[in-house]
Length: 303
Image (cartoon, rainbow, N blue to C red; front, side, top):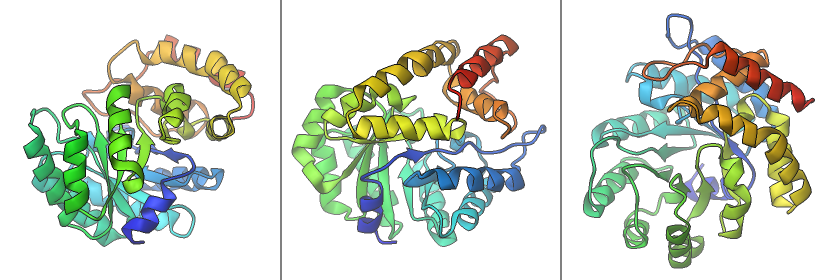
């Protein structure tokens, strides 16, 4: 798949980040991960992100990463495209991107480099180095310490033809308008705030109709129903699902930093697709929180 083909794929439809399966000792569990992907693939996501943020990319070792990507690519071949997460320091991000390309992934989502602040010149050099290390498409994740300006994106667009996507996890409306007005259809734009459904209608109005869903991991039918409601401007359905599920869901998620990942793994366990525990420094939900989440899931009926 060439970069422009990937751009077309991620320009419409719902995207999702499958969780990564660990056993009780915290080791990668490929068999149940493959089973998870086979369960999710038929629900209709345009692409799946292997080893993304919800997939705990930040906790994987260099030895584990290829196993996760290979399992995803092999399992989903012919069913749904796989975009691999890559990130961390520049040389490690390059190594991940190259390995993902070698293993047959269709592109990479370049996550932030973590912790160290950097100016725009350094961010440009980082993203450019990763893009130029591979031939397939790259989507940059605008979040935390990697916040790119319209000028920086214009520079990267000129230097890196395979940089085809911009995923926003910041939520700065003014910046998003400025970027969209400057770059137009040069990029595919993706909403990437945690629990992106809450922001989906607003982002669609900004020219960003595509987003990635974490709850697709455990209520895939509801996730697709909500996406279709956004796409068709069905406000009644959007408001109903936001009121009945997402707002009380956020009340649980916001209790502890890192629960944006933990609550998704908890949901998968509750619907019979246990992915094991999260890895430290994340922590799993408490029993009372699991009970509240179970009630929310059950209230949705058909998942």
